[in-house]
Length: 171
Image (tube, rainbow, N blue to C red; front, side):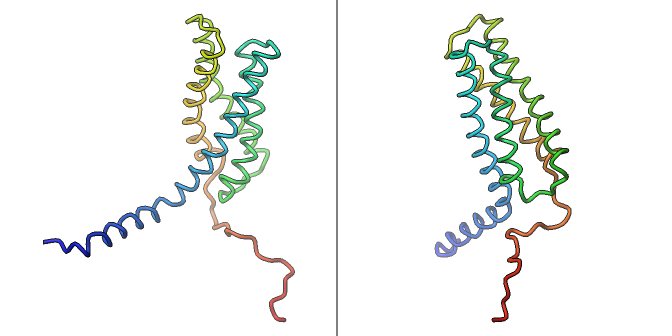
């Protein structure tokens, strides 16, 4: 027979051990999601602005919007989401980040192109739905590729906080 008093504490310990095991991944995914959500809003706003207000074609508007949102996403991911990972040079990271985003952009452009030119759905709602589908597919690729090639695992532990420089403790 199971002691009922022991049950909840065993469950709490189990949940706590699961959290401890996956805490770093959970925090990283949360930060990645926040940056991605903000970049998505920038992308969506810029896409609609370029296409519906300025009058640029849907695929060109998508490329311009993605360029703007990718610049924001790089800064957010480098200096917040993946700051604990080794910095292998901003030039290298920036190039790879934009290369991976260029590949992910293909998902969005293909979905928008298919929706607009093959299905002949060129209204704003169809454009935005196609954009959401393309961004969703691209996001899966981006998260995987950033961890694999752009923001590499640290070879030496990086301190969570920077040490106080120049502060004397002997007073």
